[in-house]
Length: 107
Length: 119
Image 1: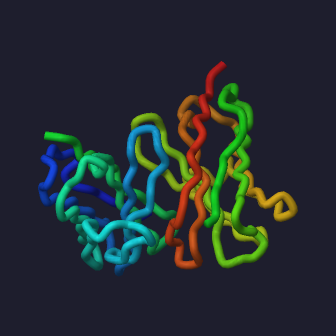
Image 2: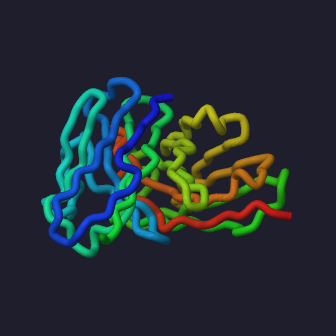
């Protein structure tokens, strides 16, 4: 299985901050990388696919980059509704696997 | 837009079989072009992909669960189902159904249902 890691595991930030989360795959996955946002008690929401493509309806403050083994999710200006846990997922090979998550909370 | 809704018992006894159904609305499973998937999340933990089914009945299961998992589809009811046998407390989780496109991109999720394994 491809192992996914994320850093940091948690971070505290203020409204308006620029936030960057890193995801690393244990082997190359080209750009078959997705990002999800999950709020407490809710299902995950799909944000980004193909490493950098926004899902329909996702605001442009979210952006993704990377290829191969190293990827980033950036939130350009953190808003109150963005405080959540973010997961990366590889879909290059089976079984699909997720990172352990990065919790973004209020400083 | 397709909507997904999980249903099934919230409590299952150890060694029994967990059975869940995902009802799809706003689209037809039999139209093809999508994979229908199950994913679970242990309490306070990360996400684990269980497997998928295509409308034709072809499946893929996570090897970590393969010996205990069956995913099936009922196109007449526009539903797909998950069965997980010989459950233990370690199978206690929120179970989500989800829709994936042909590139395995997850498009949308159901709201999830908590299943607790306890006697």
